[in-house]
Amino acid sequence: MTGKKWGWLWIWAIAICYAQVYVGKHYPFDILAGALTGYITGMGMSRLFLFWWNRLGDAWKYKGRLAAINRDSPDRAANTFGPFA
Image 1 (cartoon, rainbow, N blue to C red):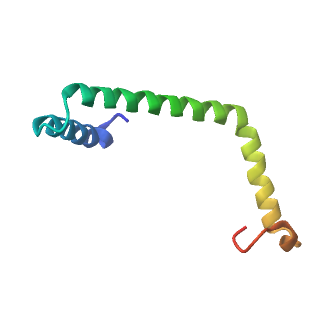
Image 2 (image 1 turned 180 degrees about the horizontal axis):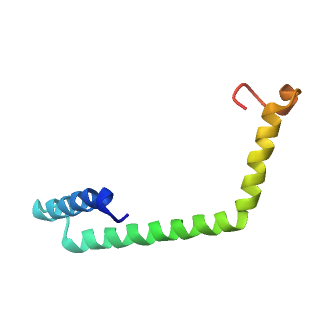
């Protein structure tokens, strides 16, 4: 989340952090601990997604082609379960 497009988001987040400390709602350590927890969680989920993408990417691509084949088949009613499939 870098670049000019995301700059306003960082300014907004810092302003909210400052305001929470200013009004006495949180201690500075609370803010830092929350930021660190969010960063670690975000990085972990990003790595997990990349792991799944690299490991299962071909299977997902195949599943998408299979869905397109089933959607275009003449016996579509046999390949669906319910009105939204």
